[in-house]
Image (cartoon, rainbow, N blue to C red; front, side, top):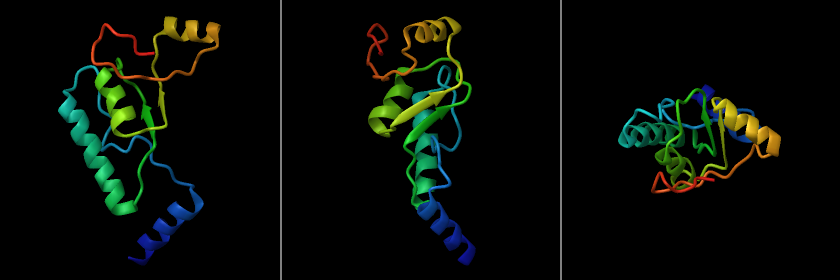
Length: 118
C-alpha cells in the first residue's frame, strides 16, 4: 500500500511515466470489429483512471495494416488525443510527404470512404 502511494506520487509529480494509447492492447484496425476496438480501449482507460488517475492523450500504433475511419474517430473525437504516432506507412505516401515537407497531418474521421481524410 505504501509503495503504491510512492509510485503514484512519482507518476504525478515528476511526469516521468507516460501512458500511450491506454488500451488493454493495441488492436488491429483492418480486421477487427469496432466493438472490440471500443471495448479494449475502454477497459484500458478505466483501469488507468481507477488505479493511477491517468488519462492518455497520445495514441500509438506500432504495426497496423491499414488505418480505419473508426480508429480516427475513436482517437480524435471520442478520446480527444492530441497526437498519433504510427510505425507503418506506405512507402509512396511517405516519399511524397517528405518531398512536400508535409509529414504531419490532421486526421479527420469521415463517415464515408469516398471522402477525403486529410
